[in-house]
Amino acid sequence: MHDYLILIDKINQKFEQFKLIVLKETKEVEELENFHLTPQQEVIMFYIIRNEPVIANDIANHFDISKSAVSQVISKLEEMKMIVRQENSINRRETLISLGNRGQEFRDLLKKIDDILVEKYYSKVSLAELKNVLDTLDKIVGTNNNKGS
Picture 1 (cartoon, rainbow, N blue to C red):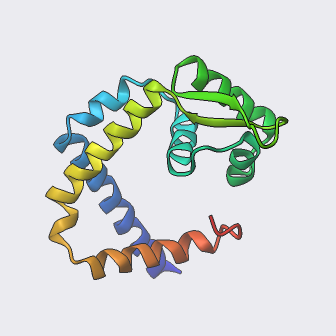
Picture 2: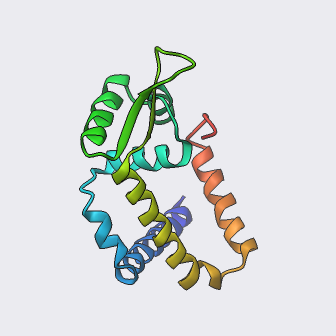
Picture 3: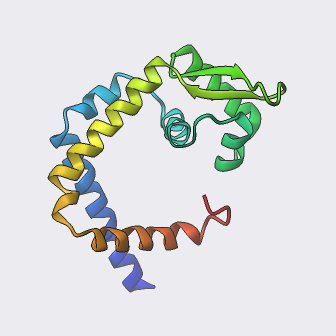
């Protein structure tokens, strides 16, 4: 157990160092702050970007949060023009959630940051090594997430 704690501390330090590198190297990160998203809004936006269009139930199930909590976040994101809602023509009881104008700007900024990180950092590591990192994180996250997100 002690060996795990020592190693985990080192991993956490590397994650913190990487976050500092990202903050220092990419001026776009400052632009992210201009969106004024809470951590919960940000993570829900990441989900919508990867899965749009979505319905509120998808978000509630994915994050294991109440529909009313999702509704509050979605209302705020809509007010901020981050998302738009429209009736599902196939199932009129559902409302589809997609990116609004500001949400598209947010997505584009995230892509720009990813491009910078790939160019400056990730490209210095082999794809096999990156896949090993992903596989390891999948195992760690998988132990606490039976939904297989």
